Amino acid sequence: MNETSHAIDATGDRWILTGPLTMDSAASVLSSSRDMRLPSSGIVDLGRLDAVDSAAVAVLIAWKRRAKAEGAPMAFLNIPPTMASLANLYGVEELLQAAIV
Image (cartoon, rainbow, N blue to C red; front, side, top):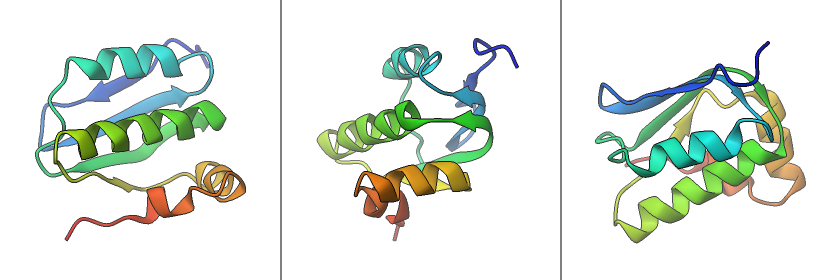
């Protein structure tokens, strides 16, 4: 898979990520998201990611910090098992498990 074929679909009320979110794409994904409004629903859907590594966890942490700074909710849906394992390994699993109420 081409590591540059990633995207954030922000056309609806949530962000939907597709493609890889790895060390090769994380900086670009994070950079492109800076100019986007946070999802109005507070939901980021990770179900269409086809590859993740520790850089993906770093991106999610950055987004959670941004949401907190902006006073907005953020929750992650359809978390890939590899990402959940990495978050557990790094002790930040509660970051991924937070739900919007």
